[in-house]
Length: 174
Image 1 (cartoon, one colour):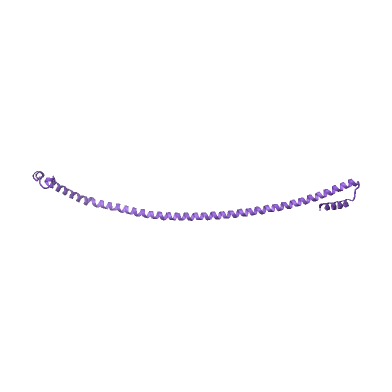
Image 2 (cartoon, rainbow, N blue to C red):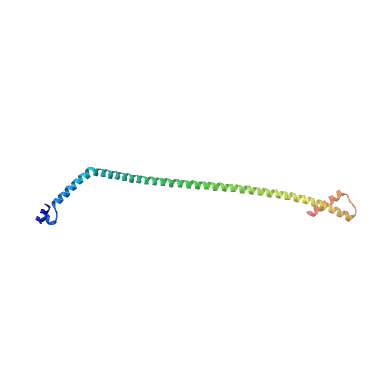
């Protein structure tokens, strides 16, 4: 038959080299194969594709949700870091002020101590000078008395000598 159409019918479809029985057999094979695939595999394939589509959608939604959560967390971290920096600045300012006060108090204490030491030293120097002047005056009186005794070659009353010499020294000192 196949040959019959091909050789006798050179007009129409046969002239194009198309065999209608072959097309019919291929169509029938396709329909049988389509029915088998639809009955046994197509539903499972569609279900798997739908599951995969749902997983992808939920993954995308989860990704978007995680991105929003990450942005929110990043803002929270930035805010906490800013607050921590402000707290650290306040602590540093307080520490600087406290250290300045401690230094100032130490300087004042040291200055007061130095002034007290200078006052004490001046008083001691003045006291030592007065003692030294009295000692020098006493030694000078004795030297003058001894010199007078040597010059006059006689010993006068010691009490009178001292009074005369002290009066003379006080007049010279003025």
